[in-house]
Image 1 (cartoon, rainbow, N blue to C red):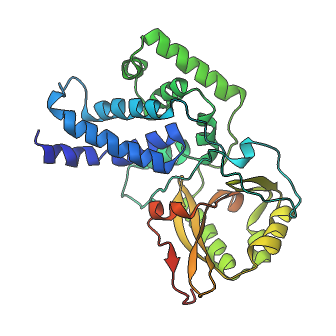
Image 2: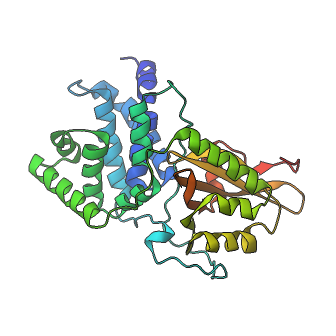
Image 3: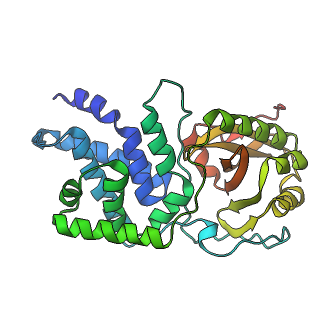
Length: 321
């Protein structure tokens, strides 16, 4: 196959490889780097590809081993809820902990009717939700790889064993231990079957209330037991009253703007704060998880460097929204 043909074919697997590397690493930046490395390795080595497996299988093998090499000696990525208990005190200390390896969000496209296989959309939405990706990070790297390859991507145990260079029995053992570990400490559940149209309605309401600095309207969009996290700040809040007080006390003290995006199969917003010159500068990516038409979880990633991954500008002009 000519190099140009291989590049076009490999590119068709880019999104699922990105999701796989993200589930392995918990970092969109590292996942994108490793997908690039995977495609480059595939292009360079395609003349040695013997065709005994599909190109997709071959690329997954390269990507999985690249991830395992990248994970050697690194710390697992976490969310604030994985480090300590929540508080309902809106005056709690909000010191940053930049030394922690924090989970980051994954940009995902807006699901369009008939544009993609609905089953693929469901798998992407369910398998990249933040609580589940955070749970994957608790597993040892090779257990994580076996679990993702078999239970998420759908490879046979024998194929996973070949990817990892181990026996089938060893792969079964990794898989069983990974499943048992998740069963002992299961990730928080959310409504992974939520109606996308309802999600969009919630997002529109959230954007309107956010840009109007309408704390009461925002609070009406929240469930009673809502959680609110702000990595790289370890402190996190639980409960509508605590979140409302935090928004009133800390967030809406300066003009803000927001743009709609999507992350981890969920509605999300890119938020901006106004600088002294009147422009709005990148502030955070907020991922909204919903249940029954209300927001059950908000994760505010205070990482402006994420904005290019989501295709939104770092700076907006001072023109009102």
